[in-house]
Length: 173
Image (cartoon, rainbow, N blue to C red; front, side, top):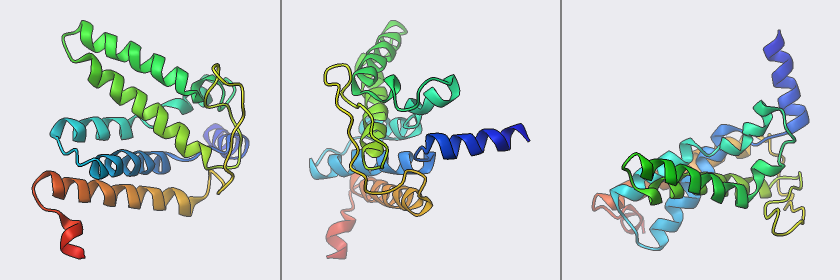
């Protein structure tokens, strides 16, 4: 019964875009940009998949019971978190840039996705203290969230085909 109450509070009070929406939006954004820029590497594939997997990380504020879309929904926080994870990876003998890129991308794509919803927040805090919302759809809109997952997954498939030598878009047209 407690989990039902928590879900109701989560969906009504916080009105957060769901994991499917953020995951799919990250896939769409990252692999779409890489496709346009003609960047096709296995490393970028791994980075994009890891970032999509972590794309709901800024919503940790809900579990921590701090103000939703506050400090965790700032690109500045994403860059700091990326730098910390990058340093930890470097300390253990891995590439700093992979840790930095994965976490910063996860935060940034989440924040960009949330900008399309109705609830304003401060994505550039503390540099700019301006609340922004494009107000295109409700963040709990199931159709939008599932569509983002579908479109993002489709973008990933197109990227994978191209990565392995098949330009599926040219075959379609």
